[in-house]
Structure formats: C-alpha cells, structure tokens
Length: 255
Image (cartoon, rainbow, N blue to C red; front, side):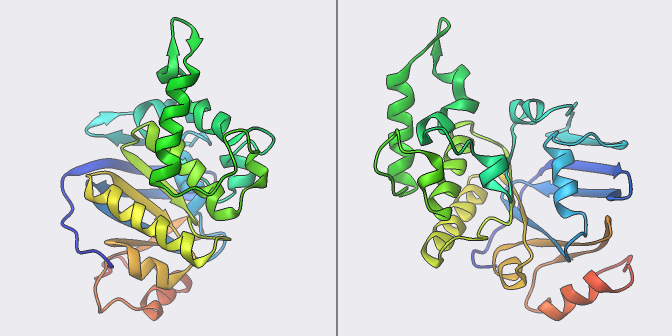
C-alpha cells in the first residue's frame, strides 16, 4: 500500500449476507485503520454487497455488527445514524441532489446537528461548510452554486464533506475516483489514508486494479455474488493474481 498501516480492532462484521443471487453468503470484517478493497468484474456483486451495509437494499438474510453491536439496517437513515456512510458510484443520481445548492447538499444529512429548537442555524452550517471547502480544497464560486455545476472531482468532495461532518465510523467509497481528474484523485487518496490513520474503517470498491493494489491493506475478490478469495496486500499480490480469482474457480484458502 502507499501508506504503511497497522490495522486495529475489528470495527465492522458482515455475516452471511444474502440477497437473491446477487449476494451469496458473503462474510467479512473491517478493522480500525485499514482500507479493505472489494474488486471483481462487472456484475460481481460488490455494489450490491455494500448497499446491504448501507440499508439501501433489504437482504434475505445475514447480520451486520458495528463495534460488537448488531445493527438493524432497514433504511440508509439507519446506517447513517449508526455511523456507516456511502459515497456512491453514481454520485449524480444517488450522492447529490443536483438541482440544489452545494451547501444544501452538505446540510441535508446534518440538519439535526445544525438545528436549534426546531430552527436551522444557518450561520453554524455555513461556518462548518466553509471549513470543508478549505480542508478539501473544493473549487466553488459560492455556497449557492448548484451541485450540477461542479466538476466530478468537486462533486465527490462535496459528498465527502457531508459524511465527514457526520463523523462516520465506516466509510464506503464505491469507485471513488471514476470520472475525476488526476489531481482530484490524489486528493481523494490522501483523505482516505488520513481517515484510516484516524481509526476509521474504509471499504473501497474499485475496478481499477492498480488503485486496489496501491491503496488497500486487504483485498476481497468477488464473482457472481460470491467471495472468491481474501488476500492480504503484499508485493506478491499482482493484477494477475486478482484477475485469476475474478474469473476463476473459488479459492478457499487464498494466501
């Protein structure tokens, strides 16, 4: 990995997740301070798996625990309240409300925090958003700028800002750098590493094998809804290793 990390205690446990034939008996753990990558070919079931963690889909069976507490994830609101947040692959349709301002997008999941006796404290919301504009170097013309008017990289930073304000414990990045420029990619990588260093659990879905090998501590490879192998990232793990798992037979004991 780009950054040498020593993962801590188990934060998230997913046990025997099932949903139709899209997710089949998937179990894994996410530790504090690690980046866990999910990879595989299109249709492997990666996004479908994390949607179960986020309460966006209802599973047929399975359990999710965070810090030893079993969660009931009927809706995304349940996941957000528990501390699990998703940066969706489709940020235009699922991560942002494009017709609203960037400040409104930032504030929506944080209304409770910025409300005082039922009234929105606009100044507190503005001050907090200003902090993230500086921290994340979001290039905007002003708070009222529509989310639809930002570049892909800046849209991704707005999505990240609202989840950072929630102080999420588990952050799921689904294809985090798709459709953004090289400079913004590097900044997203820096933030993922920073969050891991703070003890957060990071799940990264990526089809880009160099990205998987460059960013992750452990790698889960999926095919047709099943886990084909779990590997600890090391110089011995190559793109060929991952591709063989993604297209081949299931390995019960991937090294």
